[in-house]
Length: 437
Image (cartoon, one colour):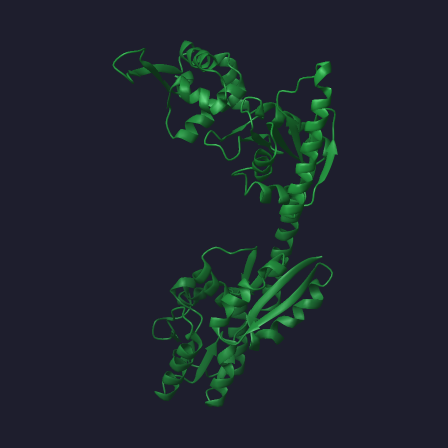
């Protein structure tokens, strides 16, 4: 079941409690309360790891956002919206029938929320007092003091506050006060949004991932069979050690000439640091006396993930000691952790297919050239650039670029002389838009 932490002011707890039975079949709630804003940051940082998501009031959200910049887990907030605002205003006007809104103070409407539309209803002479507050640790005291000052100056007959933590003090001062809070409907909408998005994310993170780990340059001649078996034993032992040390449990299965790692998308993100390097490959590099390659496949079924892993492993052959990922959308990312890492699509895009037919060049080659242009932020490439990023020989790279030149989408812009002697280096300017001229 989904676990959600709820961060809110201590005095607001009873307002939120009614939400619990409405969603008890979909998630488990844990309430974390504070009495002063300076408690919120630690409350969040010390507890977020225990939950799939966190829900909080708007003030807490703004405060934490200011402190830590980036939320560590899916985080949502609720606040007073126009529906709640006008429903409560209607009730107030029924209770205080002679109320003059120009003698009211409201502490939660401002230019930031467009005064919840009140400027469109009341004239400047009728408009209530508002409190312009800035977020800081003593905000409750600051807002309380402003309410008190307006009351002592006999400028207001009623205070309307969205801050539950100052309600008792206002009442003790004898200031007529109405507490505004989000409706149960609004709070429920926030929780339902959180639950739906977390469930969707969990489905994504539970997608099947298979890693195809192969030993490079296997020799299957009769005299080397024992050597191959020894390498496979060492590889299996290292994979087990990695799993134990990193506390990343996965299933290891032996194939004919490779091993399969079966894991989840969530764990793949961890062991590749969001596809920036491959910690499994780095570990094997350090602990094995021979080279291996790893192809990762992401799929919605075991068959799909396995097929993509095998294709990804074949792609690594151009990058010895490499690790490449093929996603469920046929995006190819790799080699991970290398300067030559690029990302391109292996799927068939209709427009790309038209371009391919027009040029007589494969879609995959076009995709790869486009990815190099994106990676280098330049459409001026040499054969050395193409060779480096695609893992092909200089001769193969030259053939690709000459082919693009023949088709009119590449031209030799200039030849860079690296030294006083030797052949100059050709630089090709590539523009696929020329195909449409």
